[in-house]
Amino acid sequence: MPQRINRAIELLAQDQPIYYMGGHTGHVLTYEQGKQDAATWADYINVGMEHGAFDMTGLAEYMRGLVDGGPTRSGHRTPTVIVEAPVEGISAEIVRYNSWQFRQILARGVHGVLLCQAEDPEAVRAFVEACRYPINRIGVGEGLAEGRRGVGSEPSATPIWGVSRDEYLRLAEPWPLNPTGELLLGVKIESAAAIPHIEAILSVPGLGFAEMGPGDLSLSLGYFHLPQPMPPEMEEIRRRVRAACLAHHIAFLESATPADIAEKIDAGARVIAGHREDIAQIGRAHTRRTMPV
Image (cartoon, rainbow, N blue to C red; front, side, top):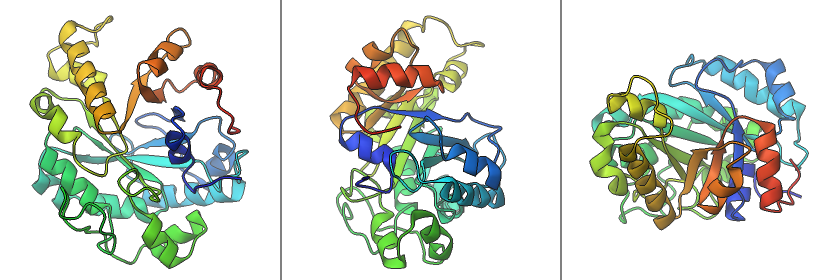
């Protein structure tokens, strides 16, 4: 039986890597697609709204379909769903001005949000605060101000999670900052402007995962196409992001192939991009995972 609502967090808490499906755009957000995706091989579903449509009606129908198509084979009510928000993490002011996006996304009952173009630690702090209810106090005064999320979304979020209003307010918290939290908040380090601030950004309380976004970062550094292999300057940024993730107990997101998945896991990657079931199968065998897919 599952121990948590969020399957991705349950696995990360066991130091098991997680594998996701879904790109930066084009994810079909319908009730029928949700019913179909309830049986996904992936541990979480990435919904790209940074470049894809900001479709809250579609997202609500998709989440409803996941519930009706569930539970998952692991016994969870739905797969974990994490949404890439359109706002960029350039400054605290920009994030606060656009924090309505997080409220709208979380109101649909999703399990996490990814902040793209994270460049400033204060912007990331504002992001975490915007996703929290003020009633929850862990970390307040210790790197965070009180939460800014208001009441009103519970009638749409609680039926997706299958909990009461009070349970939702307690559980809609960022993990691992709150050990009982069921929200997974992440950031992308993907611009030259972020490079001087990598360690400070990833020290902000409330983050659950982070990645170096190689595509956008390569453009920001002047490469028209992502070089393969990555140039030394990008390898050094990747090393710094991974080291900061490990230092602050944040899951490091990295792409992998069937040939290098075991090596990537052994080096510290815990969120695996690749969007392929065969990569997940090899990785799960490597870590002797027991939770059903």
